[in-house]
Length: 373
Image (cartoon, rainbow, N blue to C red; front, top):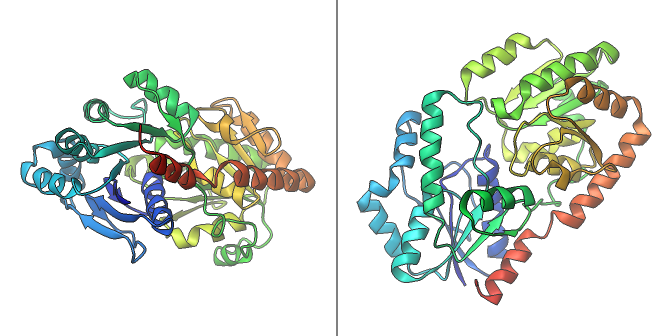
């Protein structure tokens, strides 16, 4: 079976891109012939996977304009629609790539699966950014209307999509590669790199963006420090918004370490080094790093938002009320001060990942083999 996977970019710091990459690799190993189409890529794929780079400007401003107005690039649209008509199935992960899937389906009847990752809300953005994203959301909504099937990455995402479009979808959780993310990784490598020795480490991995709630995580961490002075907060991720990042740095101290961007290959060592994973996100469609941390047998503390209650239960960590930094801090303190509790939660988290978050590709293969209907 020839499968085309469409994703706007392939960057290691993007959760959507990492899901598309893993999906392409798994489909190849299941015997499919896979080509990934992207506007831009910095990720190296398996040699068996074909890659089609459509191309766009390296300038961030022009990238945003181009992505919004991509359907007006008639030359590239025609070129890649002609290529896509030769595939059995197209799996598209986001607008503007949905445009190519939409038109190929409309013109040539090629089966089209839209893999839905909820779009970031606009509550933390400025006026111009909100206008831009509202147009983007509208175009995404239009270009999924003729999809044969929609896959949502969580029940929360399914409900959000149905509310927005009136269309239903099938929930297929993101897959965790437990050959890479597991509790057998050496925990000392990162501790030695940052001279952390035996300090309790609280870990966050993700983009440094307001909706990730890092300003609240730092506030909660400062409360933790009052009880556990040697605690450290390790923040791993790229800061796309420089102003927000500067404000976080002003609120930080020597116990808070910003690592910047790290490669996908390095991620397991950071999870292994930590004692507890913390997500103060105010909005998520899934939260891939949190599940990866659980695969490393790490207990988790997070705000009770969006899909988090689908991932965490009372056995695997603590969910606290949104924006309640005091409760968040007390949950972290409890886990750090009670190693037996942390170990039990970590073990339960590992089992939960193994049961619920390792079979998404198999589910997609089954859908493809049974026919998209």
